[in-house]
Amino acid sequence: MDVILHIGAHRTASTSFQHFMRAHAGPLAGHGVGFWGPGRTRTGLLHGVADAPVSSAQARRSVGRVRLNLNGAERRGANVLIVSDENLIGTPRRCLRARALYPEIGLRMTRLHAAFAPVSRVVLQVRSLDHWWASVMAFLVPRGGGIPPAAAMEQIASATRSWRHVITDLACACPDSEIIVSPFEVFGSRPDLLFSQMAGRDWPLGGNPDAFWLNQRPLLPKLRQVVEQRGGDATLLPTGDGRWQPFTDDQAARLREAYADDLFWLRAGADGLARLTQDPEPAKTAKTLVVGHDLRGHGHDGSARRLAPTR
Image 1 (spheres, one colour):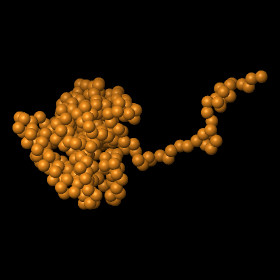
Image 2 (cartoon, rainbow, N blue to C red):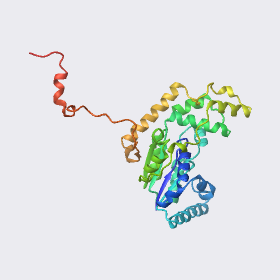
Image 3 (cartoon, rainbow, N blue to C red):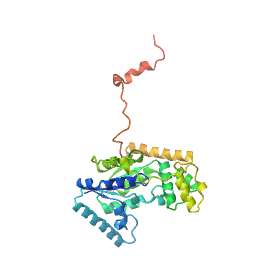
Image 4 (cartoon, rainbow, N blue to C red):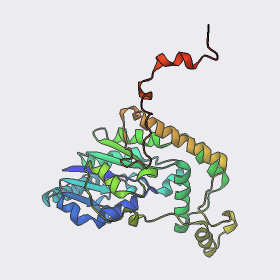
């Protein structure tokens, strides 16, 4: 049985993907595809696996519990098992507290990889850092999180850790697994395409993929209302009705540049550590050369550089 771990990240439409998979559980089971989402993984199945166990005995019991469930899925006819839970690599609150992207991913994924071994693929969806951090903060405010001070914004914007470092830690923790990285900007609204890339197969499952766009970040009016209801200072949030962008223009530009560097590294091969998925349905028609121009080359450059005809 091929085990595929979809580890998020948070705020990259992982909830939408999980809802899509549950909605198509019947047809997928008929194709031999099983699915475990947070409803399965957060009810004690992974207790003492991802987080550090309190003792070696608990570690053995935790791994044994996972192995028993894997054997059960295989007996029920699953040839492929997709395990999707963004909390496998940590939580947004821990990231914000550390002012860093998933600082514990290496240790957590080492333990998870050993429990689920062999793991065929590990799938990570990444997002532009300025929008990712802004979405994380907007997500945490209604859940009791505070509004980070300006010093925290500068610390995050100046941090050297980016998705490249997260992927490198992931590759070290899962050396025998194929690591697939997908950009949120391409696959965030298309869980069907993400599933095809993840499973390595193209099964038309039907339905409207846009119907599964869930758990979007709250807008500024909602955030101000939440802060006021709990007695906080809503004036710390900007005015307006759109999304909250807590970074200055300069800070956001630095985060976008770091993300662009990450994508460049991934497109260049990611040092052999991971594979970047490409858009299987490009929105723009590819440009082709005019007939006859495809035969031109370096030999035709000489005349084009002359300012005037020579005698």
